[in-house]
Length: 283
Image (cartoon, rainbow, N blue to C red; front, side, top):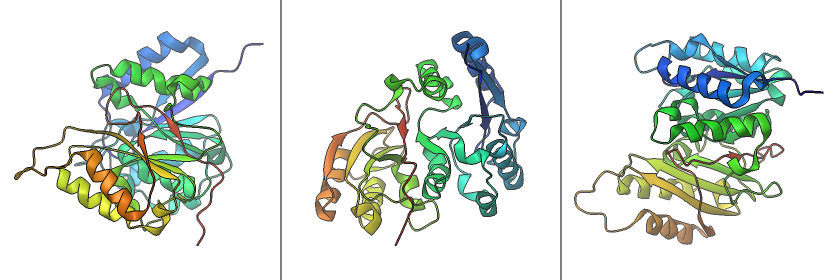
């Protein structure tokens, strides 16, 4: 008997998704999965309200709507940017049983939502490519990688260091630094923490690493892996340390194991890192 089609809803809790990107992703999905996948782009993805994909209320309502709808197996975040932290905080208390059995996939600013869901034990959060990545060079492969995991749990889509028996998280460093101390901070005890970033000066990376590695929760992690830091603006004067040297410096100072590299980043090669599903934050 053929397996029932998987249904995936796309929403944009931060910035607007270009309609042409959605059309391209839909075409790729049809070609790759045929009737085995139903991909729904919520109309909210294409709203525009200043910086955001519609006002806070519209973005909050769209996320809650698709998360609570049992017709969808997964929620795929359209893109990052900024805005996830502005969602109505009360919506997380309104997530129903259907929301608790879904996958949630995205990265960058979506780490705010993914961290909150992981902290509260809602569904399965994962760092990974988003529909907007289709516009990157080589982006079609990133989109198909994400869909292959959401639809078929394709193991080749996973970050190669990820292990089912070893909890792991992946975050944009700047987003991670900002979510510490909030309800989006998950429990890092015993977990591998992977970081990546884009468009940040080295001095800002240094400062973010100071903040992140000073956090007691982070210091209880099993170790840190370094993903790709891309499009780094030139420092004036030169910073005279590489990203790896910065990360190793702060890990050593904090007593955090540096575990090497991770295959994550703001690029088409970004791999999937499923978050733990059974770790609740405790004091």
